[in-house]
Image (spheres, one colour):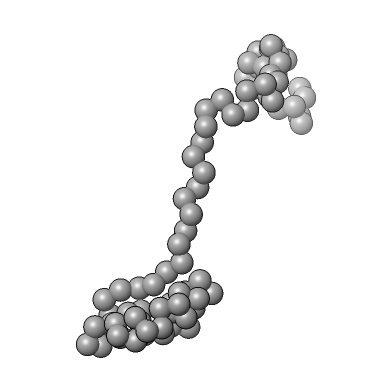
Length: 84
């Protein structure tokens, strides 16, 4: 739902209009019948990432980047579902 009010009315009903915007209503402010502004709820910015926040909470195996030979062979030599 959308509501359009002129600037004078917006000044006198600001608190009510803010509540309407927070509730999801589209609040348009007009000057001489021409829309000039839209009242929208404030969106908090996402929390900034802090490098190293998970330090000591994650463990990785020493061989995590070593691929087993039999798996490499499957990529190049065959289909594991259809052994030759």
